[in-house]
Length: 355
Ligand code: NAD
Ligand code: WQD
Picture 1: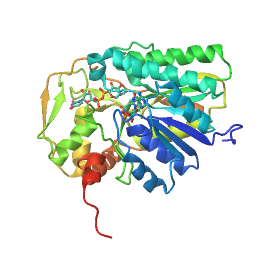
Picture 2: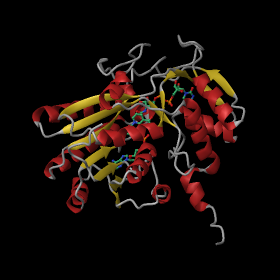
Picture 3: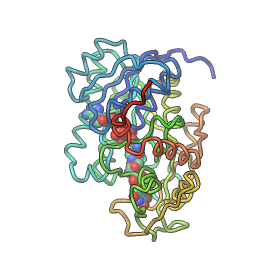
Picture 4: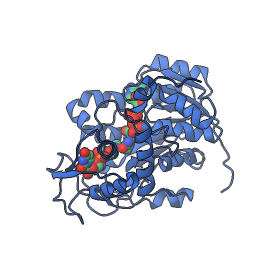
């Protein structure tokens, strides 16, 4: 397309140490952006930045350990750096955690977002890419869901994301200088193809692919498949998995569209393909050449049968679509797990080889 009339050079990445944020840092550095990160390491470790920089062959401009709800600390970052645009990944993301601790989730996800918006406003920064989630749709039915599907969040995590979207829409309505792109990710999975970056949650993983990887490694005996009686082709729940590299590529391309039209724009990010739990098991087993023993058990409370994107809006708007397959996600997730059986911290504890 035509060169954008406005191009950011310095991007603030909140939650830049996390799974998606760390891959976004690589993508931005690879494309010449200056990257500033803030993260409180609630679900990540600072070890990740050595890997980000090793892959990119460049340094992250600055990394600040802070809680985005701390407006003084956040403001000091904006004072110090000429931030052009913000990618806002920082949030708590466990659905079960949000049922357990709703106030903590609203405080971090909604309070974190309002704190960021106030700070951006004070510093004249008006361009934001926001991490939203397919979970805002709730139990919306089996068909592919487009962005006009009414939001019916069914847990505090999803409700907190929906509340942020509403706040962002209200800000854009009141202030024409704002452009906000809300990206509703379906199920990001996979890892950087180098094997250096991947998903390294603190504590037991919630998500399917890290669990499957743990079984392939032999760290857990078998996968618990949550439900075999869904109204789906094989009875297991169907999701729309998207490679984390495609997810962050979409964020980088979003920067080129932050000057297209003011206001808030919402896009699904998914492959638009329904993939069942057993499809993931089969693909991972193939990618890893390991058996993945599993046991079909009861449904997980709060899960829905099917969540698949109509992902056509983003390709219409930007001429971009995700290209990486489920096989790519499994290959890359397995590569990362095999090289980092205990995650980043485990790797740091290994004695350094003699030069
Ligand atoms: P993640 O937990 O790996 O990353 C989130 C990062 O934010 C972590 O590094 C964490 O330490 C940081 N953080 C949390 N609270 C903070 C605070 N108060 N101040 C500063 N930093 C804070 O999660 P992820 O998978 O990389 O998700 C990134 C974003 O995408 C989140 O907003 C999440 O809700 C959203 N999302 C994720 C998925 C998914 O399946 N991974 C799907 C849809 C949406
Ligand atoms: C995928 C499928 C499980 C683990 C959540 C959020 C969503 C988004 C992505 C943040 C489901 C099944 C899982 C296991 C299993 N995140 N499963 N055994 O629940 O689709 O989506 O993460 O925004 O908002 O809701 O993802 O990876 O947890 O589960 O059978 O050990 O795998 O039941 O059908 P989910 P998931």
